[in-house]
Image (cartoon, rainbow, N blue to C red; front, side, top):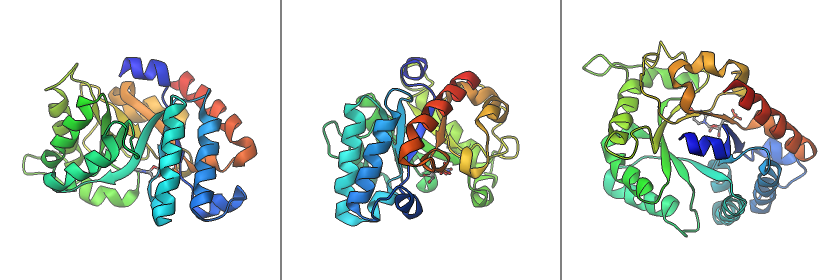
Length: 269
Ligand SMILES: O=c1ccn([C@@H]2O[C@H](COP(=O)(O)O)[C@@H](O)[C@H]2O)c(=O)[nH]1
């Protein structure tokens, strides 16, 4: 984790071509629009930040044209040396997860990413083969533990029979899997939104760091300057993710916005 952060920094630039943003950027709402948007964000990121997170929903929305665009954006980002987190939020029974692992993690595959987001609703155990597939090829994954949207709390703060919150159980299961491999603090991480009250989510007393993908900054209200305060013990593993707050700078301002925010994150973490 330390080496990855030293090389790539802690800012993750979201590639979320919302329809409104496409219009603001003067791009059509189509496969070619999301392609051009994604490629421009990649270009603006190189040199300032080391991680991007395409939100696959906004590509998928255009069917096969969207996926062709996504393949091109992923390829450009990886060729430029950026780490790519595919925000795909996949989660299935184990046997079907094999399909997703092949799609997103296979070396040389058209949708290859360095890490992907996973949904644990079908049980963290059924994600274990995907964790192993990622680890085998030096990749990672982030499992949703406590999401940034207020609605997530009703499920994620529910208590399991042993009294832990669902969020905490997910985090502990991920940490237990990590403990079976490598240095024990990766390669699998969790998603914890920056808008989450860690104490209320049962996540304020985690002792061992692990990678944390942290959305919720910027447009959703959290401030990067407060990252250590928000994440406490978990700060060591945090990757600050921002999409709309950067993307709304438009094609002329995006490179500057990313470089400013990257400096701010460096000064905070
Ligand atoms: O808990 C979560 C998990 C994922 N997301 C995703 O992150 C970005 C956030 O975009 P902003 O424009 O910075 O709000 C988006 O792709 C979400 O789907 C999240 O927000 N919260």
